[in-house]
Image (cartoon, rainbow, N blue to C red):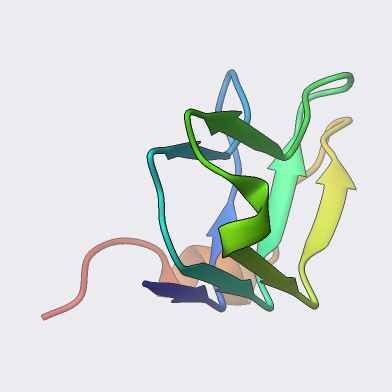
Length: 77
């Protein structure tokens, strides 16, 4: 699985969680975390099978998403 170009914010816990994940690539994502919350959590996943490439981690202290993020949010056909 490849997750690319996403902005994940407003979560109460780690924005990316792995549970028995295999061969996952996270590329050019923006992860906005509450202070002290790790961006990734591994629940029964082996970190060595995961690829992290150019992800941005932002500590959410009154962070507001840019207009381009809000306009692109939500499901797409």
